[in-house]
View 1 (cartoon, rainbow, N blue to C red):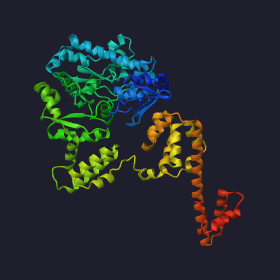
View 2 (cartoon, rainbow, N blue to C red):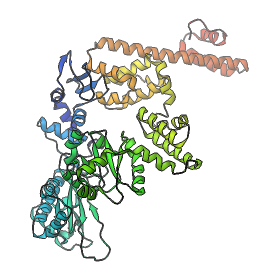
View 3 (cartoon, rainbow, N blue to C red):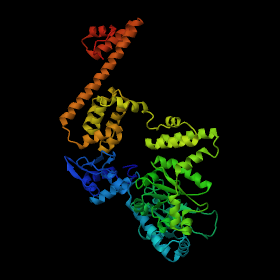
View 4 (tube, one colour):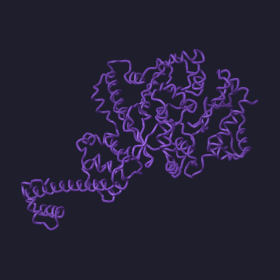
Length: 604
């Protein structure tokens, strides 16, 4: 099962089958005009502006690479980027195009996901019919009070969950849906005792219902708002109630309204984030359609990465009071970790996007969005506090900035934040940079600094060849060459290359940036196999000669040190080891070399 990339829904075997049967060239040709060049095809990159074609596609390897901007991947990566889809949706899109069936599974037991999708669709239709019917009169009144037009209600699929305890359960049973599927989808709950139809009852009762869809428009969950004027019995119910997480629904990875907002975000070149469902709907109805909302929680890095695939301009709306500015400050680290800086649009105190756009109209909302401030300002302002001379607070704020810097991958974004924070907090920029080195780079910091000195050596070339050819990687593993590597960066990379599934996109992600274009050229080129075999053999021989020279130097030093302190046993042991290393038949030669103070020319 593909975890993470496919959300646990699509079997790895199905993904492999789609990848193998899909034509990458055909998919890319929908977007890029390609022309043949040798065994590959080239065209202008769709991901950055260029005049000379550097975007190269290999149908044979199922791989694309842009030598201008470095973007690379397989057919799924291309569809994800061009259509702003998550991985599972990209797999389904490619499968549909080429008529390849994709059975979906959920959970460890391998149950199919289609029944969960079907039961959610049936529930959505039931809620919509209930809103339009006699039981939905009160909910319709509330919808009108909120200023929502009929076409808006239909566009967002709003509905009503009747107040009786098991109306939906009885409806689903009558439609022959297994109630177990409805329980798994979060629509029904089990009773403490086995009473009533099936021993279950409806999760949502007497609520205005908001279907939550995935990016392809399938209903995966629901949000329900309690209606005003509900009789008070016992503890007041929560104002909003969402479906629990399920095999179809991960609230930290999805956004309300994304299905409706995807194309408007592309057209507008920005995404607007509001707090609630009704905020998003009101803005869309007013004409600001590029709007989404989180699902009852603060924005997560995963949600922001979804938005980043659509636009790098994200504007989040906040209340203009102090609490709103604190909320804006808290949102900045997640934005930065997702590769976004973000801007904050601050509404008048006491207003939310719903009430503001209904009272003031679209033009006022657009003016507020146009005046949005960089969220880094709110973040640094909150960290620093009002007093310029608060040394202790500024020191703690600097520590917090360094924690954020360590999670930022882009060196340009790290530089910008370090500079701004240094100015605002009155600390040395160099200190922030030093303490805020990225966590992932810290263990290999010295390696990265020394890597240019090792460029062009046999270890680097062998790593390049391993990345380009899985047979080379296997040979290096079988011959146990990696322990002989001297440079930690190339040793770690070689170890990674022997451990991963060898597809071009995966290996290019593993190798250091300075090798990526060279590896891509080998993958896409027409290099003769005999040249590659000779290069591999030469690299392995050179690496082992260097390791032998190093061992020889070490043993000579041991022999000299042992003789200097009169330790005949240690000297003899080192001589024997040197003898085995150099020539089993030359004991006397080894002893002579060991005690000689001057090494022979060229021996190192």
